[in-house]
View 1 (cartoon, helix red, strand yellow):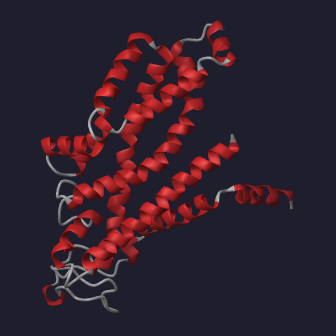
View 2 (view 1 turned 90 degrees about the vertical axis):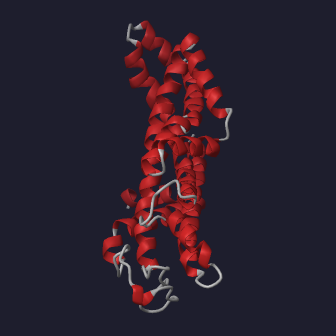
View 3 (view 1 turned 180 degrees about the vertical axis):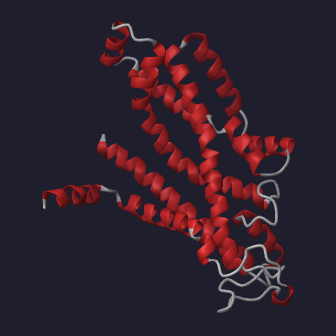
Length: 278
């Protein structure tokens, strides 16, 4: 009885937004994993006898201008967009946390150099800078990931730097230093665990933005490239047929909307949960 009471109390403390966001986001993750099982057709198979077919029992979301099944492409598109969100987060998170640790802990010229690099980066609009980098490197997801690594680390570095400056003033850091432990040990063993949580919470919120920006690049022809089943690319494919075949853009747009709302609610709920815990 007591063993069950503890998890139930923990569930009741979860914000409603967190639960809704969790359900929506992980439903899409399940869809992405099970896409080969759930999809009735190959997402890239061209069928000239089924061009621009309206939604029907045979094609639940209709077909596009090449006869490809929209439902199957939406399912496989979840894989691409979630992959884009997860992989796109890794480099900015790692780089930002690393630079934030160095800047906040050592200060001096290290802090000055990192903060000047940060100021230069934020002087330009984020999306414009990403577009410029992708334009130089060439369209594709690899270029997008490189652009994110060069630009998206800034908020993580600022957040971690502020946390580290607060942690440095605590008694346990002073005790660690007085006991003769080196900077590397102190950073990894004591500072990092106490400042990483806010960065991870921010990453949950940033996840949806990375997906939306990546889909925007796909829509502009600079992200994932055809015939990849990516939601932004699919929306772009259907813009010419909005008046005659609305379903080509509508269903991937709806998928992007639901995943975006779910991830945003998950991030907001996680932030509120962390404030409650504190």
